[in-house]
Amino acid sequence: MTNVEGRPWADTSCLLCGAPPGDHHADCPGADPDAVAYLTEELPDGTTRTWTMAGVRYTATPARRAAITALMPTMDWYQAGRVVSLPFMLGALLKEIVPKMGIARWLARFGFHPLATIRVPDCGCTDALRCRCDFDAHPHTNAHPDLWADYSLLVLRLRRPEGWLDLWLLDIGVGAVVIAEDDSHNDPIPTGASHDCVMGWCDQCTGTGPTRDGANPPVCAHPCHTASPSTTTAVADVRPETEHADDH
Image (cartoon, rainbow, N blue to C red):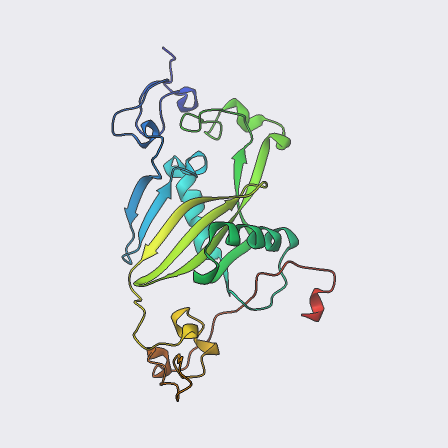
């Protein structure tokens, strides 16, 4: 057996269950090819955070998850459906993945920050559940910079009947991977609210609710119309930056 005392990076057991190579404990998500998540956490505000198996390569250890959660509060948020100048690659990515995921009708906001990146070893390990190339003192830590990648974190906020679902993704260069989901149940859709208020776009609401028969529209029932005025969040559209971005 490999002596890993003093060399945690030399361990070859599963990062999730601790089983030796070629095996997993019966309750390990790594043993289930249909598993979609490996860890669920209840946050102090009541949000349920689920870490996905799709993103396990980037989140399987407490240190990796801590690095990602430290970046989450740094997001700059934008309302969907508005005009904004975005970095070209980010705008192109959003235009590609939102339709493919089938979430356009529920997308209320998205967030990103140009400095919100995590450093990931481009090591070629074939078993993501046993890769420790980012552990302290691992030989790969001294590898050429080309063998490391910086992946950007972004988030898509979707409207749900009882609240919001935040999909946290990493842009890995050839697409995006959903690494975590934050499901909150603290903002149910009020009966009679306008579509703008349902989606959190209260600054766009005219104060009236939807109508189909041409009658006088009802007053929008969202509580924002009776709340004290507050500073609104920056709003934006999913539009890549162009050389004429200043015209928008």
